[in-house]
Image (spheres, rainbow, N blue to C red):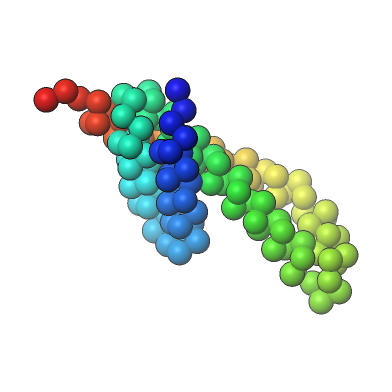
Length: 123
């Protein structure tokens, strides 16, 4: 059911949108979701599923990269300072990551369903 080629392409594009086009994130995610759904060629439900997986995967990887960045490079005292700061804000960070996963999955999933529906139509 999951087309990993479409998910990986969507993941890369979602990371690109999040890193370089932060101000236009919503529009970028709509476009990326459509592209993933179109590449999947699995109908509306398949496009929705693949785009939602790509969005969630992109959010998880970007959160891990952010945690590594905060832990290693956020303090003058090195690794221990970063770990202390991350531990203090750990619960708030988990809630924010969960909200981002839901946001990416919904936004990309909606347009992924449209892209999947368009790509599955027979001429």
